[in-house]
Image 1 (cartoon, one colour):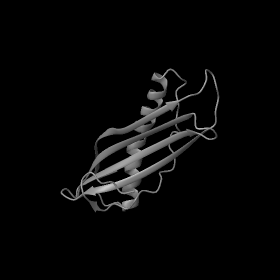
Image 2 (cartoon, rainbow, N blue to C red):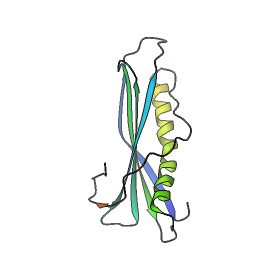
Image 3 (cartoon, helix red, strand yellow):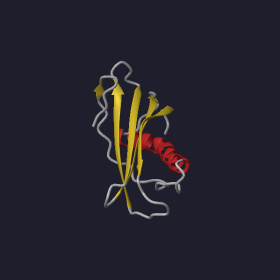
Image 4 (cartoon, rainbow, N blue to C red):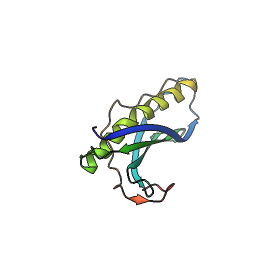
Length: 137
């Protein structure tokens, strides 16, 4: 998106639980949460956080939660509506979240968990001026 510069990302939370037996198949559910904040001291810097929760539908023997945070610079050239900016931020972060989950499960010695290529972006909280370290819920 013109005027929106992706500056990088950081995995801020990763929790993984696997109590499944060898070659056991289960039905998994995936949920996403997404939020955006604008730093008070730098109105041109937007921070987006994308959280994925994957869990077994019935018994809870498998769960995976990952949170990834990305930083974006919004320049004066960015004339898009806030909803379009938030969607672009989610679309920039999501491939990193997807790859992290794939690699985490593969490195755990299980079949890699592959999230959908491009889910519909979840509705983000409205961008507001908040203190650094706080994230809109």
